[in-house]
Length: 186
Image (cartoon, rainbow, N blue to C red; front, top):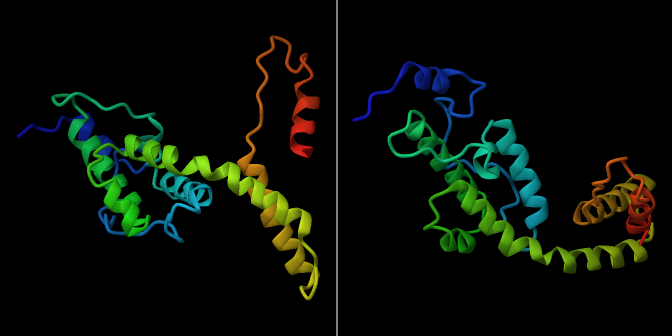
């Protein structure tokens, strides 16, 4: 058995540390609903990111916490957190998808696998959203319901079209703002 060093024990007991797991944490907990079913990846991933950020564990899926070697100080603490994050993700996806990821043992690899598989459908979803936006009418809805439904469609469509970035020495000397406005308006 590897003996824990004081700094490792402090990290695991410090609530601000990514290695800290609250004693009441449950690996069988569903962090977000609805579950990922393949058609709702974008909304699911945003909700899951928020839940993991709240628990200070998103660093395990975005790669900010590198995987230490087996003998290193933080190895066991990182492994425990990695398994907890995998469990939370697995509990927050449909049974069919969960069966397809059962052999992935790294939270970052799991996150990337789900992203690779399900984010590509965003192009089709964006097309459908733009059609819905163009055809939405108030009809029998109250103005509040109509506004809320429209806002949901616009925000989801905006989130599926990432902003372009400028790499000029003098920011936006390349007319990037004009390009981005045109991109968003299309």
